[in-house]
Image 1 (cartoon, helix red, strand yellow):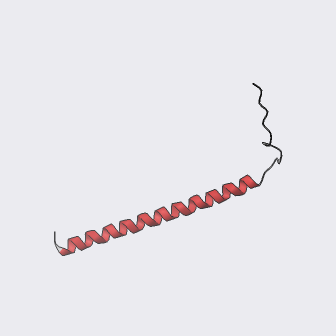
Image 2 (tube, helix red, strand yellow):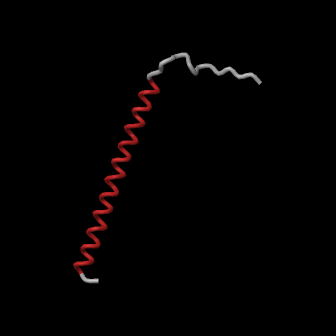
Image 3 (cartoon, helix red, strand yellow):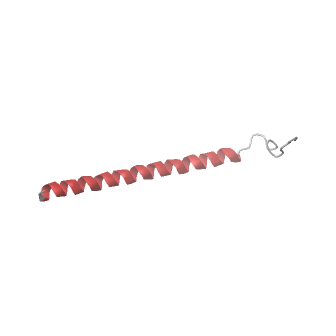
Length: 58
């Protein structure tokens, strides 16, 4: 393998790795945002007494 082909291969590998890291970063940020949105929705309790008690008969 000549130097030019090796250089091109390494450059493509580095680019692929950088793109993969960026995509994972975007996915992580989106998951964090969805988690924050879910927590905000759960804190906005529509029925404050709903789910406070559990009636079980055996």
